[in-house]
Amino acid sequence: MRSIHGVVSMFFFLYFVVWSCFEIFHCQAQPLPQHEVEALKKIGSQLGKQWDFAVDPCSGSSGWVNSTSDKDFTSNVTCGACTAASCHVISIILKSQNLTGSLPDDFSALTSLQTIDLSRNYLSGTIPVAWASLPLTKLALLGNRISGSIPEELGDISTLQELILEDNFIEGAIPHSLGKLVNLEGLLISGNNFSGQLPDSLGNLRNLTNLRIDGNPISGKIPSFVGNWTKLQRLDMQGTSMEGPFPPIFSTLESLTELRVTDLAGGDGTFPPLQNMIEMKELVLRNLSISGELPVYIGNMANLKVLDLSFNNLTGQIPVNFSMLNKLKFMYLTANQLTGAIPEWIQGRKKHNIDLSYNSFDGSDAPAYCPLSSNLNLVSSYSSTFTDNKSIASCLRKSQPCSGKARNYNLFINCGGGPVTVGDNEYQADVDSEGPSIYSSFDEKWAYSSTGDFVGNEDQQYIVTNVSALNSNLPNPELYMSARLNPLSLKYYGLCLQNGIYTVNLHFAEIMFTDDQTFASLGRRYFDVSIQGEKVLRDFNIANEANGTGQAIIKSFNANVSNNTLEIHFQWAGKGTTAIPHRSVYGPLISAISVTPNFEPDTSDSRLSTGALLCWSLRRTPLKFIIAILFNILTFI
Image 1 (tube, helix red, strand yellow):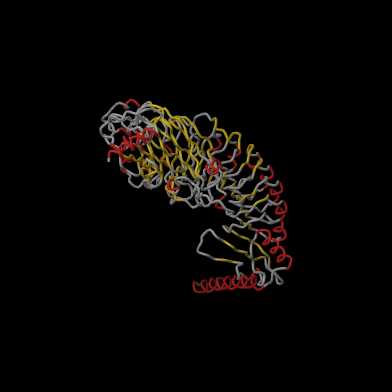
Image 2: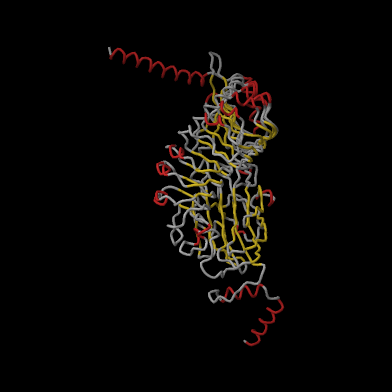
């Protein structure tokens, strides 16, 4: 009996294989209708795509189907829906080819087309209304120059499952008609200029599994219809203009594995109702004014890999059961009001990146030295009641007080690069490549604190070198060939500075985007800058301010140092593109920092070198006196 069953199973298996091969051969053997060939010619002409029409487009040869080692580059035209007489184009994927031109209406002539993927090109124009007649299941236009609004008619594509429009220039309200796309599983529209509120009709999208609206000025409260999205697995809502609080029905989204919500206005200060989301892997609730204690149920999220609750008002102790989060790789509790002792399990985990900086922990067992760990950041993590307690390391106390006399009066850092001499000033090297949760100090003169990991690419480096050509007339180009990058929060400190007013020069150049007609030129970086706790730059865009990529711009500010410490804070607020030229290119980028006094510093300290004193004196001595001194010296010789 078993042998008969095996023979039958083998027969059906062989039949399926033969049938599949026949279908493939059949599609390749049948010609494409001439009207579809003509449509492809028009599409290729408008996109700047050079196809070989000497062979049949369904042949899969001569460039119609390309396979390269580049995982992003794709150039495939796929045929299917074959009959005895012909086949039809069912998929066109042209990714990362820097195609130019505008989106052709002529796609609508390919009446069997199910997939259009033109991600990462240099295409412009608006989304053609004519495409609404196609039986599309996927429409992907990520990383282009698409403008205008989403056509209402797109809501008529009842077969659509994925709509991917990230990192373009699309604006206006989200059409109410999108609520008719009942088969839609992925709606990815981050990095555009959508405005207005989420339309109520989106509550009809009960099959939605992936929603990303980061970086759009979408407004209004988090709607209660989100409770209809019971299949939702990922929700990204960073850097919008939306308001809290989370509605109680949010607790029904038990399928969520990734939740990223940041920078909401309003809210009632309570922690969102996430107790049922036990499958959570990445939880980011940053800068939401959440107060109260850390929920114990977070410790039951056994698959949790990323926990970011930074820049809130959380109080109390870290729950004991957080030690059971064995898959945890990144934990950021930065800038809260947590108290109690820092748990021993945190200090013992070497493979985890944990940032507890800027809290109010009990300093009774605090070390007398700054931890040298590259994965545990504790800067300013202890209560202000220990500020004057010199038995605790300075870096752990609020304001990082100077351990001795404040002797420093200037600062020069080549962020992300080696030592550089510019005129009389020696810019110190800053080449530590660590970044997710690190505090590094350099000779009690300066330090930096880096917090955050890059979404979509854990391998992204925190030090980058220029891919854009630097302007040939750029002064001091050695300062701009590299830079320090950060995805969340980056702070530089001037330590043991003499009190007084300083000039702070921040040197910027956009070196990760290009200045040409490729998709790599389409990135938009926005971040905020604060000095001594005061925001001096909001939604700062380097390329816009410098009139292009590879161009330098120096922003100058006065800063008052009254406690011997200068703090410069760079912070990402969820805005701009995040997937150009690839995932994880976003966040603050700084090339160099210089800090000089606007007062006459005390140079009496014998530990200051003669050369340093001489350089400082010469910079402030009138030129005619310097010439006279040199003349007298030469005469004497």
